[in-house]
Image (tube, rainbow, N blue to C red):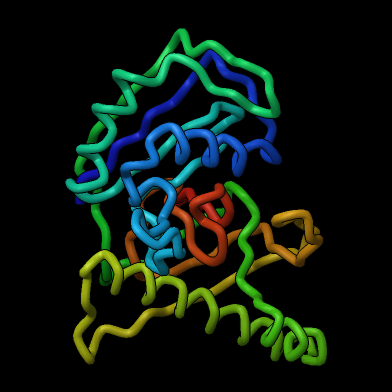
Length: 220
């Protein structure tokens, strides 16, 4: 799978600014629905795994694209983007670093360990109530099922299908943290998980991955 990372080393943003960074780029390049995931005619949200995601990688703002279609958009962003505007503050873009690579993605016979480089939001309103009422072991099993579902959903949208005998294995060690999403306080998770699925660094799983949440980084 093709992956491109466009980073802005001279731009300083906080994690709370990433959704505004995404909003600015989405408006600036509004003719590309892959960036903002809204139908160009109706304005309605397009529900799919985001092929373009906005991140804060080691304190550096970055945009990640996966698949040939999404990576091809980067040439336009790279050439035209000379400033970023966040909360009426104009930030000149002097340095842009573009890295394009082929990465492995999909089921594996090996087990890999990942850490969440940004908080993972795996619970919605419905399963959060069930989670809160569960004991420790039930919570653990529930989170494992959610991560499995996240991986399978991502895999499906990226046209990577598992055979009947290919089962996702998950082991987790997570810690609850409070996160702010669209002005609302929610429960997120930091920590590590192991799985037999190859996920390229900094791709997100769970909710709001286009805004930087749920970014994973391979440890082993």
